[in-house]
Length: 334
View: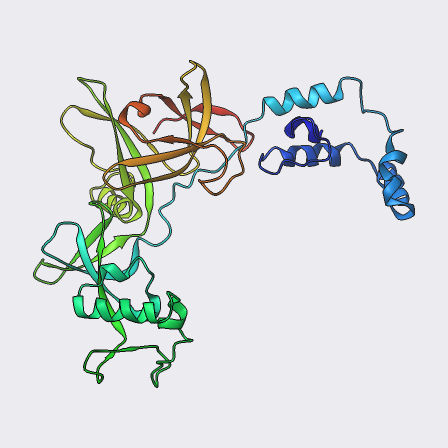
């Protein structure tokens, strides 16, 4: 049975395919107590000859492997959609505004610095000092600014001397660029924004269609905005919903997609396939990462996921589906 998922290799258990659990379940279901005890006795005597001794065990029925393969090919692995608004709404780091759109400043301890942060240090003099210090330590960040630095204050924190040799540099201000929609402003009592926070991640993506041109648009909704939408819908006496108010005009809402939601997708070969949403991200644009339901890859860089990055690729989604715990697919009504 291993060979069904491992391109003919009976010794390889393909753990990149969730259906390897099905193989385990079939083995357990077809192993009675007497067979289990028989295998245990053989294993205690000589594990090296175990396979040779077990060759005498017949298949449960003649077409067993063909039947297993047919069943495996018809399995759609069920994943529970992550639709609840949970997790951090905002990241912990506070940012100050600048005169430049989407550019912010924040303070970092020097032991938090990475090489990519150093060119972003706001103060030119301090940036030169930090750069020189790193060069003196042959590019070793830990030696220059970490706990192994030879400049450690009474508080146990590393520091670097300012040019006057009297002032300790423990923190620096760096710039950070964030795309519109990935941060929120916090207002004071007068309604003026005095600091910013990056949103804590995306909750879902909303797909809209233009009634005139049939063009599609993807709108990413952060957990922060999804929570705000929930509160607003309840306040207005409507059923709780994390969905936004829409794009207005000629745009109509088609459906939303959360992590682990299923879609039917029309491939370039004209064939319809089933995918689940693994991740959604974006800034000025968007990227929706789709996986075959059987794939067990957790890293989007592994395997061969399908990435939707253009408005035209959204047209390939023919409909949104829902799957029950037994793997039965039906059309979803968002």
